[in-house]
Image (cartoon, rainbow, N blue to C red; front, top):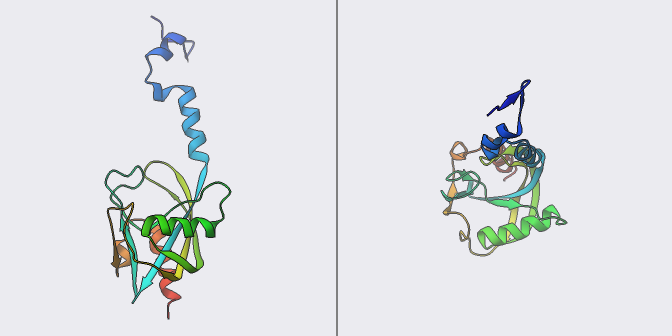
Length: 162
């Protein structure tokens, strides 16, 4: 069986390659990687501490990392509406006042490219409870955050605190 002909892969050669190496699959992966997903994260501050989540070990993206709570913006949803929805879904709280403090590009461990919009939640109500993360807790050390964009955004939010 001839797998190469003049340096190009033959049809017989394509059949023995792993599926993830074929042109169709590579093009689909590259298209997915070029897309940037908009995300919103909410920074809650209380007595110079900020709320973090420990992601579940079985999460598709960034398993086990310590991050700022948030999630994806749905199609045709404003950033503010996404923030309100995500904070309700992730933490069970109602956002009353939030200010955009930072925007960063980030590539998650699953390869997804994200544009994260960080909001400082200045007023909110409700009892905080983790609904999707392994746990949430108040942290005082910025260096304990797993990703650099989170650390940068929290520094900005803390600098605006009285």
